Length: 222
Length: 336
Image (cartoon, rainbow over all chains, first blue to last red; front, side, top):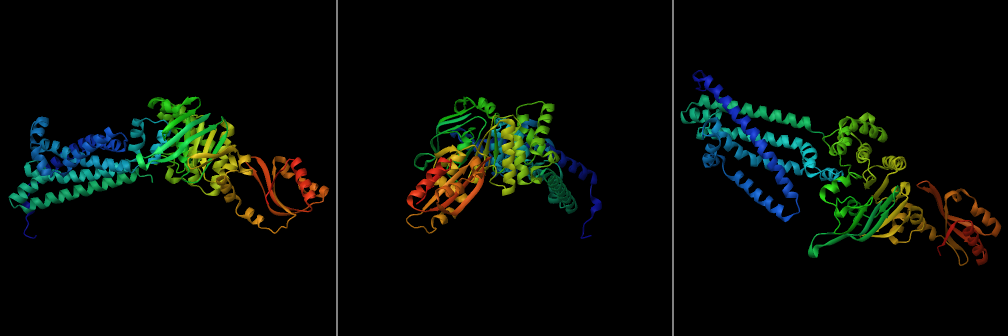
């Protein structure tokens, strides 16, 4: 069919690559969430403060986040090699890709967190305040639960972005489906491998988006 | 119960400063329903938000239940706020929590144990008549039901004071009345001090004991609702009451009258409202009268009547009539 011969495919290798992609995705998504959520809350809290000192912290954080978001991911991977080695010991493979993935995605997710927290009705925060809630109680019991649908939508977008980041990391020997597509499909002109890898990633993104949408719907009460 | 002393609130800095409250003094007694009425922008919202320091006054003192809130540290203020319930125009419920969880919210903030929370919430659900809706989310409720949840939530921590920030302004007239009735019930059952702000005279008239009229950041008139309502002094107060009575009082003044007749406003209050004072007096003095405009209504539980009449006869007869009805306990205001 169209001069393609799928019989040459090494399904075993595709399976390993798929698994690698999933590993990178899950690990980086977990750490992105763990780092990005508090960072987003911090950005939100600082941006609301009336104190000049806190506003200055906000501005500094904001600039750092913007810088991390504007550096192309492929450059970020290379630039972070010393950092990556110091944390996980290697700069390649599944393990070596996770730190740059997290550093690349956490600021992005933090911004999405900040935005969805801003969507929370100010009146509800005020009501909590009038009931004597502390700042921590407001964050944990009002802001985060009220923003949950928005946070889940943001997380979905971030994870989908991470899928394309894992593919880019294939350029520097990151492993996974993207790696496969580039090494076999691009460098060795094995169109079949490229097509299957890309198809697998399309399916993955579809599934992630559907799962995310479903979760958002489940938690939306408006 | 609540005492504001020389409270000033300024917004902005330098040349752009606007003064929302200018050196305002106000006292609310324990157990009363105190109303503050004013146009939008008069400062009434700022005023009520100063009472629990949601808005920190630029200067002045805010005493609630013997404590000056402006002197408290952050944590002490949080503890003190639990004694002050508040309900809002837009309800401000947690949209992600059920009716039950919304009402339980202030109790959980105060780390009340689970069984006590359940008992309290059930009691409150019953008080506001929402037993059937305990597991619904706010989006599934009507405006009136949402405000009932708001009230139950505000009462959960057994507050001494309930602040109502335009609590009925987003509701239709019927729902407004049912919420007002609930507030009155609570005031009587729980001996709760209620402060409410509104721009509707109707709200003040239905449930308040005392009222203050706020205009341009200051109180221009204050007193019992009957006094302020029946004998308004300040032009802004008159405006609110005329807005209520419509233009008929103005029309009454345009009725034809000659030099000898007098147009008078007679005010009946309490039981006298149902007394036949006017016809009795007219029979005795021989005065004739035409009724130009009249109202009989209630201020909270007190019936009152207000008649604008044209008294006809010679000057002496009219004078005598006015003296008689005044002696009978009516308030007479000669309008021409």
